[in-house]
Image (cartoon, rainbow, N blue to C red; front, side):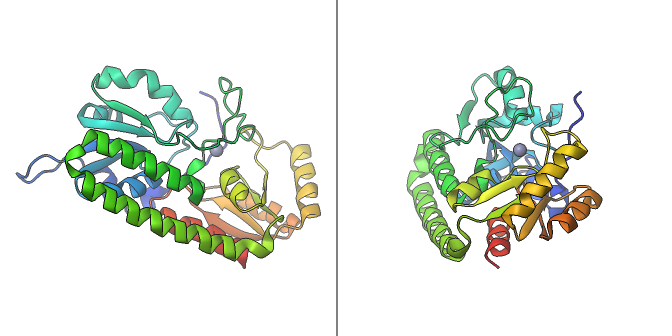
Length: 289
Ligand SMILES: [Zn+2]
């Protein structure tokens, strides 16, 4: 197995018991199940379906989504699921795609990123991914609105009886996101054209939304060669960024050393956490400061 940069995502610390609290029913009718890949999707989907579905999450305990391999118990969840909502283009999703129907021939498989203008070239970590499509679509509020629309459409297909309820939930949530999107745009108006530093390039879509440059220091998912890092740091300094985002669970020694060289302010982020809106707000607040 290829050794990759450790983007450990300690979502376990967020107390997300709900994500793995399998089908306990207390005599009530079994809740129907939809499986998603990552916790931000669970957050989105629960806004739309409320309690009508039990939302299971593949990557609920941390790990690098680009190298993660779901264990048997996660794959077994697919047996009980009406649908599997992929976020699309994550390494592990591409890995299991061919096996899903073996676990459940009737499952509906949906790519909830459909319609998003994908960014390529930032992710050349995977030998079989020539285009290097950036899978972090959910770090953009604009993309989140596309994702929730796709989710809504798919949920209505699975459970048309409750369409009215889902539609109201979807519309309310979309309105909330629209306002959120506008508030960030206002917040970041004055820093447009500027740059920020991030270890792993997980904020490409966010950067695109607000006209910012993302300078990522990671080297093809591997340990960063010294010469490469020196050049990157030199470039970063020339762009005068104020903030350096690093992913939760990273080796902070290296981060702190580089941060001191660039002269940025360190901000820890957890783009794979359940509390998606707080994470995005944290990023916007840091940049808008
Ligand atoms: Zn990535």
